[in-house]
Length: 283
Ligand code: AMP
Ligand code: MN
Ligand code: MN
Ligand code: MN
Image 1 (spheres, rainbow, N blue to C red):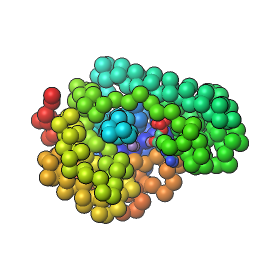
Image 2 (image 1 turned 90 degrees about the vertical axis):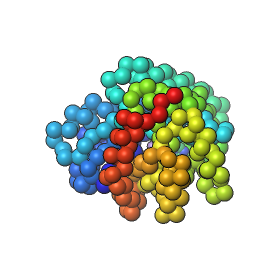
Image 3 (image 1 turned 120 degrees about the vertical axis):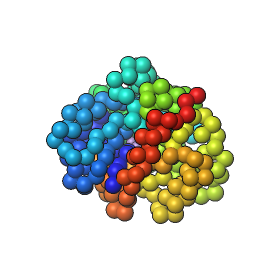
Image 4 (image 1 turned 30 degrees about the vertical axis):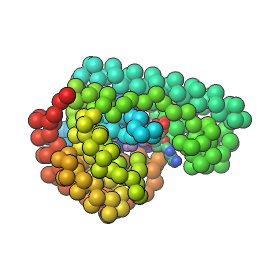
């Protein structure tokens, strides 16, 4: 089994890259791709673990895009960590994130919850600050009792204290990832929209914009969702990927490799992904 979607404390997870490599070996995974949001900051430490573990360690990232008025996540799998232009592009995204964070601090103060940049930094082990760290800072300052309450009342997508980031278009994200030698993949489509959403047409639009794969196996999918998205990828000729979206203590109950318990991402998906990386379309 493999896991092509997980996070460390370089974004909004709680584990070090070193620990993820060891956990992947313990879970007897054959491959692990690290996909922290907007950064390859954990990649050097991850790759340095390769001599010590059997699991193949791979490079990726997760970017946020705007699509149909909402946030769509795109995985850049197998990108080249030595690509300077891609690194500069990620740095630009982190700058936009920082702008958003400062505006969110101002908004929260207006709402009667004054926290400082330093309060949030104190909750993070690396420079990338996300809403997970806001939630912990709000709890530490006593504005909410526990971090999840911050998402319910203050900083969840629909809440008054939330400020969206300036996000990429799917086409732009796909191009950046392709130009860095990676494969652009729609992350957890079932979480973007479910129920009656017409994925056939939307996914074809995304495919036209340069998305080459979709996450058909996911840590939080029900069996029916997995079946639906694997079949949709086959119909459209897109690659299927899969992963747990492990975040350590920030997503309790979710395990590397096995997700909520039943996740099994087959090894052969990686061979297909690598073929796509070599032969895939580039517009
Ligand atoms: P950001 O990228 O800074 O906007 O933060 C997004 C992160 O916040 C996601 O990756 C989740 O880890 C977390 N998050 C967003 N919404 C919620 C929620 N309703 N409950 C718990 N965590 C959330
Ligand atoms: Mn996350
Ligand atoms: Mn995501
Ligand atoms: Mn993720």
